Length: 341
Image 1: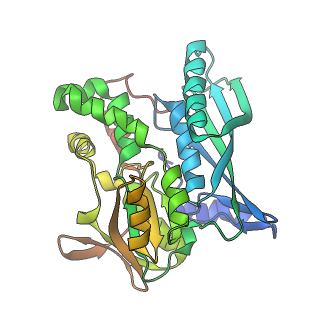
Image 2: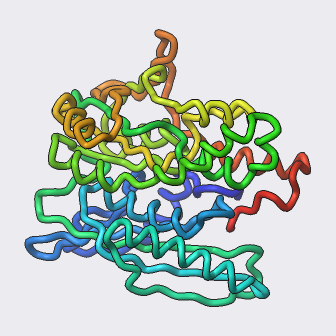
């Protein structure tokens, strides 16, 4: 198999039939659902886990925000993290120290604790591998899942497409991009790492009309919208021209011939809302940019581009992985760009 997420058809055929069942699991594993939700009486426990597999820098910070963003997409309060760090033989102690420093700073900024985990030196690894598990809580009836979108709900997006992918590419391929785009553009792209958290908007949106939410990670905005529709069993119309793309993202994508709508997009939250004006007002009052980029329906799943409709399909691979493969095969910048797995 190629690098990237395991294809949906293989998940459904090989992974999902072997998961067991318990009555106190309220939200089970399925396409588009990033969190398990467990019944704990008046509260629910929300749990998720994520690896960081396509970045060489800021791995500690990325691990915290990517995992907590999954919790935020339910409206849950992040509480604790479990961090697994597997380093290759010969890894520098300074790398572990830098990783933990970033992770601790990010966790402190969100008001949560790295409560445990595992660290070891593992033979056979080419690079450090990080896996983060996040635990959160919410009151019964005060959370949503990916599968709650309903026909007639508006589809909102916070911030912009491709935030995480922009930060990764600008940081890990700075020496390649700077001569082509200029040091200032690349520096601004690197600074996107500060926009990765969707915890504030998730907590706000669940109180202001959200019926479903989804963190736009691998496959970008297009894949995340499709996953919301698939999980909810509804159609969706996505308006390409209404999806915000920041200039730095557009410039970096143009260098690689990439589509920003298929680029990993942690930092952007997709929100289905039956009260979109109220939801947008709550977000904007908190200083969080939000755009209406489509709506859910009983019909098919389509993209509206230039006034025309075309089928909406998830990207087979995130554009970041495609760039990685093509860049490596051309021998450009060998040794500069190291995915962690």
